[in-house]
Image (cartoon, rainbow, N blue to C red; front, side):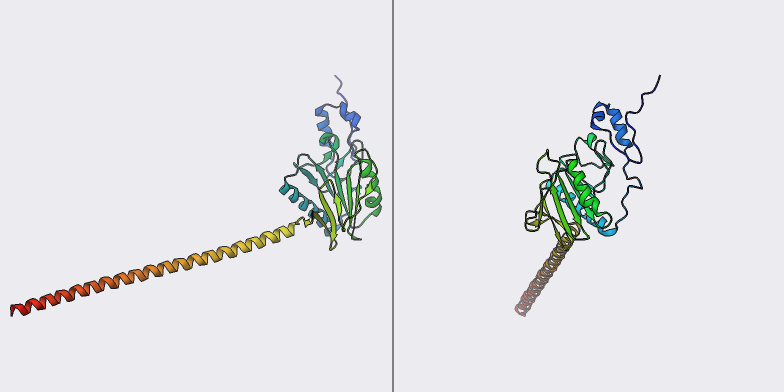
Length: 282
């Protein structure tokens, strides 16, 4: 019996998910095998060169800040950094930060659009060095064609922030997001983005979304305040204990003196009676 040929071959040099038409005809087992065969990292000849701390810290800070914010607000937004993304029959790509709303937030090795049932809603690229054309031109065309609702570019070298949005679900051409008061509104995130001191910041209303270092500093301040309050409470408790012990000693001393005086009075009265008795006997 001849074995059924594999319905889709993943080329290691250019890994792609199958076209949607083919995906729709596949069995669930075939789909799972294909998704598992999609690489979770770039081929070496496609990987971007390392960009150092300025690139790494910027993307991780954005990911952590957004993750903590959505966790606190209870909103389901899946976030990832440089996760391989597979659109049907498209070359793999991996935004510095990506967001998909209203989906499960479990860990993933890749995002296969056909398997997940949804494409990206938000992409953020951080440009430090390398090809400016990729981030400023190619991604604008590609992300809009793939219907990624919003694309933000943080050009850290030039300290610039640029935002794009698809104005309708059918649109495949980005419109620039115009800043208001120096902030760019993200409808996907429900936040505003801005640059402060050459750093990317997120705002909810007029309040900045706290970053990791700020949260740590705030928690440390709260901890120091609580430790001070605890030390003050312990000191007051010790002083109250000493006061009570002193009060107890004072009362015990007063009781001892009273009892001693009562004994002395009884002895004196007894001596008086003895002397009276002796005088009557004479």
